[in-house]
Length: 420
Image 1 (cartoon, rainbow, N blue to C red):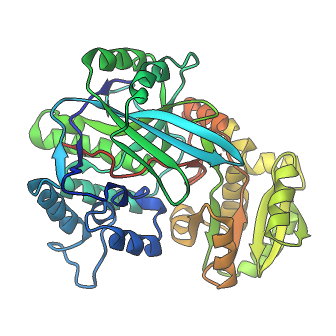
Image 2 (image 1 turned 180 degrees about the vertical axis):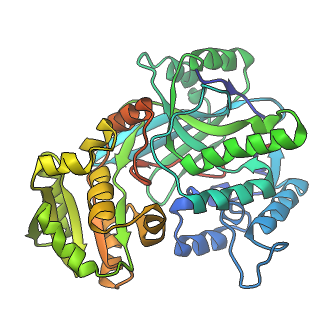
């Protein structure tokens, strides 16, 4: 059900870029302004300059972060900073990491996924308008997939990993350990028989988006846009993706916490939370997270005025009533309850207001710090959405609220680029 295509990847030239480990960056949407500045200083050719260029007060239609990225991208190609592989390939990528005290090794590969009716990579989250507007402007400027969409497939026999492992015995083209102590390794596979085998196996697999919903939707709309302009499809009729199997080694999920700002009469609305939830004050952040994890059913953490609380639904019938118009698969998720009961029913936020008033972080300490410094008025901490729940929701055709999941670790940007 997934048609994958090898491609001639555009990669950093090791003869021109000596400190190759310094040019990589996380996905654009998890990079803070501070980290953006650090990555700019880290290396003159860091991929950050393409995926998340700096803005200027003098930006206009002709000169802005997108046009500058487009010019810089072409410059790097002309100067052989970035060079194209000579043969169509897929690219193996592994990450060795520790999650909740357990050592893990994720195995996956980069390839292009062709956009075809009925063969979409299944989403599980809703998307926001602003990030899509941002990414489409960048794509129009560079005509490339700079970052991979992170996806997973179900392969109970691990046939695909078994086909990749012989290549992993060779010395990787790239191998390095990052600041989070994640070891990244990268190999090129241009053997036609191996690629054909992977293609054949993937045709029977259903694929799911783990991370990159905005970029996936933008790539698909860009494909349609270009088809209308050119009258036929080209290499833009597919998108570069990172594929990994659905298993405990490959899919580690973390919660994404919500920060709320600038809500009228917020204190009154916070007080009314007690009408729906049993509110228990706890000593600190550690106690809150620990208490949450032990609860059965819904359990939200909350930080308000530097105090910590655990919220549990008082009445399941009230919950069922408030969530009656939501998909059944939603109703066991903390993020869905937070979205529907707190944000929509108690805070009276519509979709546009949620996009403007709610921000996200995976770091609970950052969330608490934001409340302490009054950058945010209140922070909410949902429990983790499990990978199995993500799959069920995607298969049902429904979507969770934005930023319901944080798959860890993210594939880095800069290993390979798909230029149309």
